[in-house]
Length: 119
Image 1 (spheres, rainbow, N blue to C red):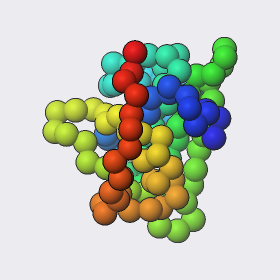
Image 2: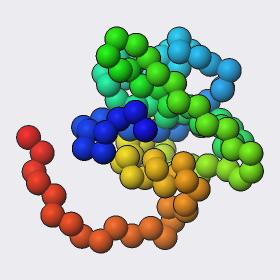
Image 3: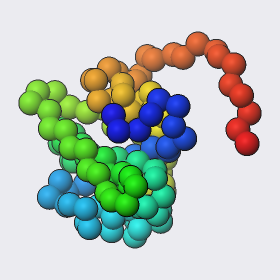
């Protein structure tokens, strides 16, 4: 991926089906208007279509946008539940990788690890 494993990038999964015809400007519009986010923040915004076969990630990197686009030839992406009334869900980089690899999130259990306090 285009962000490092130790990066402080946050990942925001859009909670509604997205129109995959949207490009840079259309996805930025969803971020600003529906998610009340800042598309140039350096965070990654994740969009999945209604049939859950296409995914786009929008990311701002050093003066320009990057769109990562994946189309599945078979199967679907798992869509984690978004709380009622919320437009998005913040997920971890690890959870995004599991979704991209087609690994079910339902029975995943992470063992306890030491976490340094965020500053």
